[in-house]
Length: 401
Image (cartoon, rainbow, N blue to C red; front, side):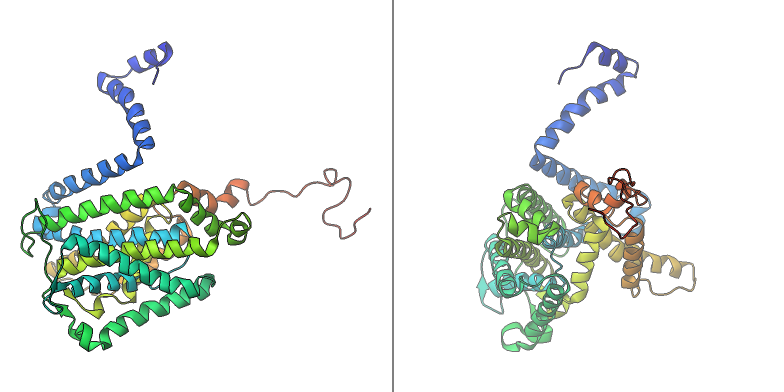
């Protein structure tokens, strides 16, 4: 970076601190722009380092103890992984998937079969993480292969049906899944360099989740910037034009489904290991709806926006609504049970978001331009005049040759 004499004189007008910031900011920003993987690593690491200290500050420390906050952040990380995975399908490829919780269930039960007294197996955690992702991706291909020729509402209905079928199968296959009771006593991870995983010590789960988020975000970012990612966006914009330009739309959509499903399986393994229990009622349609709402809230198509939307939505759902109940109870004020109305509040928030900011809180620039193209061009653009059309009045139905 070079600074001209004029720029240097301009900088000298500022105090010393501002001068240093101005001098360092541009190179750092350019470096992070060119090395997005490094930016993701530094960003997630900084957030994971600051959150444990932020919750010890006044006001926040009155809500919950630090360990409870950290346990909640680990659970929020599960929804961040789910949202980033669904963003591949919905945000990048433009396919509406309403049964995403099914792949979450498949990943969780894969770990339950591989590391629990029920099955008699105790495979390593890292091996089961890979297995959960692969099994979920396989089911994503099996679902997508016969259905991805469908579009729009028809595809959404098929995925919704798949999302309803999977929990019912796990519920009724008592011999293999323990039915309603679920599979309990699942073994916790055993990883080197980390303390023993237990319900009383949330730090190991918190650190593992931060590492998983870093890995997934970097991989998804690499995919988004790759040829495959550009193919996804081409299919999202116009599938017919993408096919005409030589893109195999069926394979492209299959890869979107399988990679999105693998991320969900990834999250399912962690969730099963953390809760030590897997049951069908953990994977109902409300999970798919919540993750989809997080994508819309955060900013469809933007990896950072989707992650932030999932984190904010889960924190509101688990912390804020419960604390509202506690606040009103402490002052003996009549109030509804805010937790029971959480999905009503989500629905109202989505309606408001679609009316005021349809691109989400942290949108991708491409998505923002798409949704506001009409505003940029102007809704009141005038039609060409008669002189521009060679003397023909555009409102006339008569054409002279």
